Amino acid sequence: MSALVTEHFVLQSVSSATISESGSRVAIYLSALSSGLVAIGFSSTSHRALAALAFTVLPTVFVLGLFTIARLIETSVANIVSQRRMELISDYYASLTPIGAPYFGSADSAAAHHGVRYGRWSFLFTMASMVIVVNSVLGGATAALVGVLAINASVPASTVAGIVVGLVLLGLSLLYQHRRVTPVVLSSLLLDRGHEDAELT
Image (cartoon, one colour):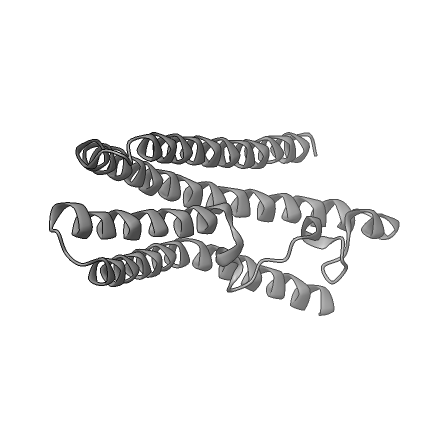
């Protein structure tokens, strides 16, 4: 019991740390992006300054976004695993005595899983998905600026190219997140069903 309580405390600390780290990384990325856009806005009156800043700042922030996305996905996986292991410990606590079950939440109650239900499409509503959308827009805008400022392409053609690049980046990033997060979520769902079946039998 002492080992379980210690493990429960450690898992809770890990879960809190992942959420705190995710929030900090998102704040750093958005701060860098907003600062870069402000700098580019001040240089918009000069074509050379605009091109120099745009082709320096935007790719740098875009790469920072990729690193942020990768780490946010990993912290999401770590949080899901920690939550699942804490739920298993809580289930054991609830099984110690019949009157203890309501205090830990049964598997089919609203209090189970800390009020959070993970499903196949849960990866679309994470902080990583938010950064993926913003970073995809940034990548598409950078591609459009390259067409206008560097290649001297027409604005409509550059806009279409930027939209295509943004959609491709969005699809690839969401696919990567799906392949990393969904197997963990599905394994948790299978464990839940197995646990429910064991309780019924």
